[in-house]
Length: 328
Image (cartoon, rainbow, N blue to C red; front, side, top):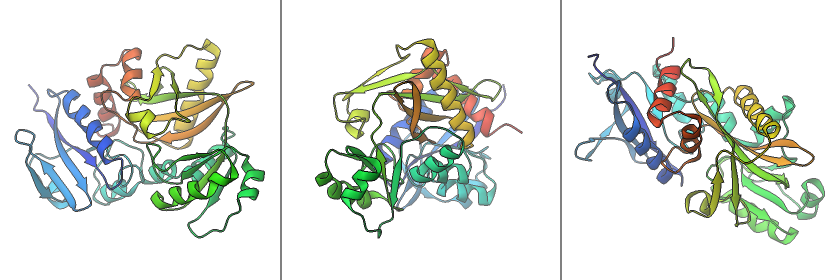
């Protein structure tokens, strides 16, 4: 029997999404094909990198030089770090410097998709529908009346670079704008994006590699919640309902899947990604988020979609590795 190939599974990170990252990495560790692969968990922490002994749970400080010198000869890294530094291109840049392969888009792709304003600009150039928006740096002055005239009220106010809906608010009136901007600025590194409200049903579509390594769309999921929007609590604390496959006409399903694949290609994603959209009347899919390292826990959306599509979790993980770490 061929000896399993060793690879790093990066988890953790420097943001509030680290707790979700650990759940996503635990899924990879639990479901990866152990006959083909030997996964080694490495925690990315503000204090450094720590390699976990799977048998004992003991964590030992490590670094990239030690990983490269490890006799197990790692074939690359399965990145499960949501937020910085795994979803904004910083970890990818570090790995590029030493020629280590990884399972996500390259550093430029990740930096793009993590920045909501830049992503919207690229998608507009590709004639892909997005909300109208205004960007503010941390020092830009603003006027609530001017914001209301430009994007309308209610509107969404978001940190330009974050995930898991952290720091996002829906401003119902101009009086809500100040607190929403302050919250977004408190967790953002590059500023704030203020977007018009898109009225409609919310859907999300995963894009993953198939057995040949070609990107393929997964079934459409509809997201409904009793909260004002699909915020952190709705995503991770059970305050939402996710219906896969969505109960929609075939024509609408096809349009959403076609849009998701177009976004994946326009932003040059690799491995798995997820595209969140609002279906507005009279019938247009507007993109609200591109997730370059989407949630991958037992309750996350992509595993749900993959199951409905006939992919086992193990097969999905293998396809991602084959198409990114092992493809010539």
